[in-house]
Amino acid sequence: MSRGLIIFIVIAVILGVAGCSSYNGLVQKDTAVEQSWAGVQTQYQRRADLIPNLVKTVQGAANFEKSTLQGVIEARANATSIKLDAKDLTPENLQKYQAAQDQLGGSLSRLLAVSENYPQLRATEGFKELQAQLEGTENRIAVSRNDFNGVVGNYNVAVRTFPASIFAGIFGFQRKGFFQASAAAQNAPSVNFDTK
Image (cartoon, rainbow, N blue to C red; front, side):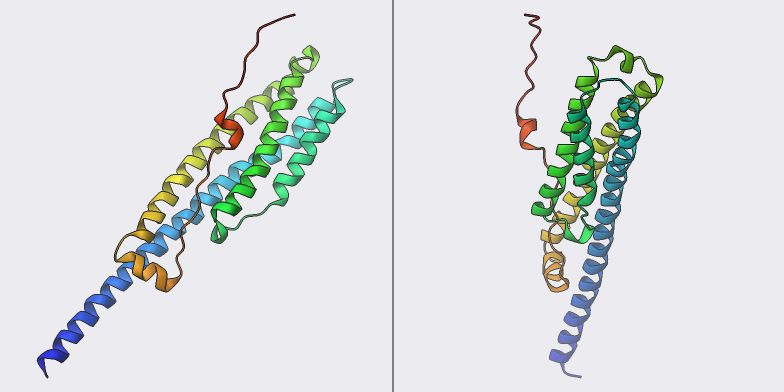
C-alpha cells in the first residue's frame, strides 16, 4: 500500500470516529432538551389542571366578579391550546408559548388579588388549599424553566463548538431557544399604602 493511501485511511477513520462521537453527544443533549421541555410542560399542565377547581371554588362565593373568572377561563383555554413540540423550540415559538402562559399567570394574579375583597372566600379551606397548590406550582414552573434553560445552554454550546458544529450542520441540529422573562417583569411593581 502506498503511504498516501494509508494517511488517507487514517484521516478517514479519525473523522469517522469524531463524527460518530459528535453525533452521539448531540443526540444525547437533544434528548436532554426534550426531556427538560416535557418537565416544563408538566408543570404548566399541573397549573392548568388546578384552575377549574379554583374557578369552581370561587364561583361558590356570592357576587364574585364574573369578568375576573371569565378572564381566567379564557386565558386557560388560550394557554392550553398552544402546543409546542420539543423539535420546534425556536425563540419565536417559545415567545408565543410564554405570552399565553403569562396571560394565564396574570389572570390568576388578578383573581387572587380580587379574592382579597371576599373574606368569606378566603376563609374557605378549599380556596386556601388551592391557593397554596397554585403557589407551589408557580415555584415548580420557575425551577423547571431554569433547568430547561440550563440544558438548552449545554446543547447550544455543543452545537456551536468545533468540531461538533460541523457535524451539527451536517445532521441538522439547530440551536434551541431559551425561556426569557416577559417584558412586564422588567418593571418593579408599585406598592401603595395610601388608604385615601
